Image (spheres, rainbow, N blue to C red):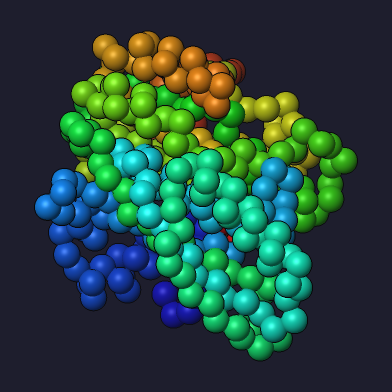
Length: 332
């Protein structure tokens, strides 16, 4: 590993290699070594989660959202899947000289609307400007602090645990790619970019049975599942025909050869839960408008090799590796 490539930002094995070889040896501490979506902080007022995210998406305005909405929702979602209620957020802007003020105002309006909807306050920030050609219009960094829901903590994974996804996968990746390439004139290709704050009452109610949660952004469902079972004694089997995928996303995948398991989401959660609580949790998710297409898509197996496999519709099986390649750079 001599130089940075786009694959290092894709969320797969190259991203993990970069973290393990460059950052972890230099910033080593107990919280960082967990490699979670946020750091759990034992504050006097109770456990909190701190998270940060940087957004470099292209195009900055896409079907279903924009870089401002994405920045807020993506950061809120990192807190929610850590079982934390978002409280405060910062935002830092890197602006390219020549960027249109009216577009910046549109982005700021979108951020304010998304923050208000998620009940999180943007309380501090920073702005830097670079010369023409030294950035691509605008990059945004957001950091946030949230309070952990009482009683929630990650738990040891076991064979027979169930795998739930809260809606159709791959909508963000397919929408952004189509906006770039203009392949399909299809208004149904819309990003799922949205806040997961609607899940907070459900997390509170099912804190005892939920084992762990993540949001499948870069690298999609396949990469997240591989990350979740690292260090456990389990593998994962996903049932292909149980995976919710919209017809529009499936059409794009068939056209360009994408695998929906690797397409990013920006408004979905992946939940591993104890088997005996799965049906009740699924019913609670489906009772919410945002979660009505939630589905149990597989289960954990006793497999110390930590493999993620798919039981295909044809009756076979295939492995889903945490691929080192990128499918869609600058997707979030």
